[in-house]
Image 1 (cartoon, rainbow, N blue to C red):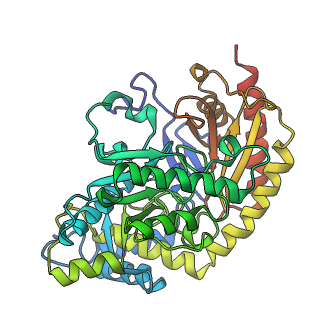
Image 2 (cartoon, protein in one colour; image 1 turned 180 degrees about the vertical axis):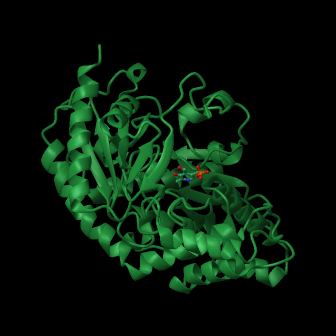
Image 3 (spheres, rainbow, N blue to C red; image 1 turned 135 degrees about the vertical axis):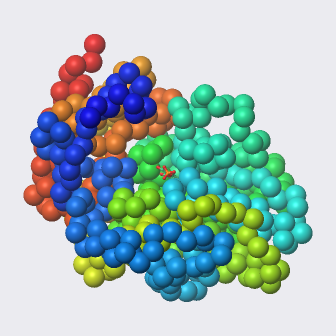
Length: 446
Ligand code: PLP
């Protein structure tokens, strides 16, 4: 078999072919062993080849693989919804399942729009989002994010209902001598100004990644930032949608990333570690305020996907979430994450081209700079993040790169987001291949 008929990201370049996975490693057809240091795209929380999850899927496949979700419910979908909703019964009223993170975001957006329609506030069709955010790859979810490289071919066709404010990005945006409180106040003021310019009663929702991944490289908010966001949303009645597709379900060391912020969302999206890559599935958790309006109006959701709440996908997610709970994997993320944090700092704090190391749990970003003192970025044409990632694969480590970290165009990062089951010894291996790959990639620059 050859890759001849498959369309790749770079149509002229065929990436290595993976034929097998085991734990934190994947193996290619030429028998190369690669440590999956970002678990794909922060997906494979249980690592590869988990027999127990495979049994959950096989068992469900033996019962029923698909039913039409408009006419029927199914066992694993109900069980999964119960697991997620009953964990935070004061926050969430219902769970909805789609297939990808993008579909979850689109659905969250549509629930918010329909909510305001049902409440008779027909003007509320505008969304406020943040620069460098990534909310998905379908046209609306791409339009509501600000990943310039992915938007570029489609600029001009995005719905004109989104405006963007600054993200909370300490390394580049927090001024020297500015306290956390002062920085939060500055961001709060900017957000309030944006709400007022648009007109608060025209705004359906503010959407943010609790800890941004793809666009900003795992940048946690400073203390008090999300409390300020929540306060402002409440002041103007605006819904708060938290996109935890990448950072949620244990990744940052708590089950929901917002648990570390002292706030709750009105609507939340999850995806990647929901079924840990064993099946494609995403979820939208709908809060009481929104659900009550749907319930009281008796109105049908105007949102449907053929494969929503797919029995096989839900069965995989049930298996993954049960294993997560039984093995205390969220606590393991917190403790292994501490070790990863220490090793990253020990190895790279003094590295001349690692400008910043930030993250939480097993969700860490390294931002690369040409000059550490001035924080000058590398020329974007060298695609330094992607280059280090490519050298890493050659050396036996995969890490997901990101570009445009500073302003959507300049700045490079790599994400370190390994499976939750990674051992300390495997963390050591990851760090040593990473160190070698950074030096090798940067030495190869013209
Ligand atoms: N939202 C966030 C925060 C993401 O990180 C991603 C993907 O990386 C998405 C949405 C889109 O998810 P998917 O690629 O599954 O459509």
